[in-house]
Length: 276
Image (cartoon, rainbow, N blue to C red):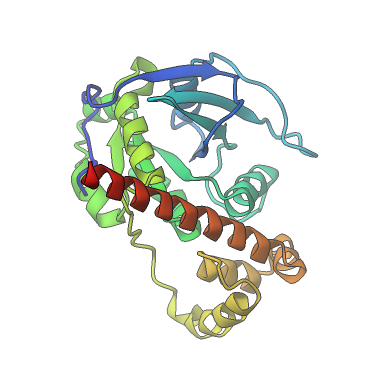
């Protein structure tokens, strides 16, 4: 995986403009996920230029944060999801994060992890990768890791996970510009991730194998049928109702249309560039 970078690498991005709360006319939606105390809000502030952000998710007491930035004229809306350790909907925070990733289907998900506690933080990374391959890991607090004598091999971590990994020290802005370059590459398909998700546990394999075809029958274009099967087996009412009502099928169709249009547009652009 070529897009792994040390925290000092901040020279490869260009023309990034923080847009604060101005989320008008955005082209892509980026979700920011992560455990509490990983510096996720600091990453959000570094990208958008905001110093504080308030608001609630609809019908929830959970704080909602949105901002925007622009790279080379392309506007991105950034949604800061609640800090959470998992997506299993055991709390309001987890449900909000899970629902946004599954039902809003952002163009890319940046998972901020604490470079000093990777083992604990990777649980959420694997859960996000089950939902979407368009995942980028932001290994934040790289300076704290060095102070503690922890060496993080970002390139090896990217190879093991199958998704890009970028090191940052967000409170200093270090590595943030490169993070955006990698996100743009993932969104535009210049980098195609191949997440190495955790194999299905043997006791569940038979049940998952039986449920996945049923899920795909109801939502043929769903890119994360295995994860949906897990949620159904665990009795997730929200996912079950979304599948039963056709909501998931509609979202999957819309997402597929957007992906196909983007692929066709990129192919046309590439052909025009070659002919010129």
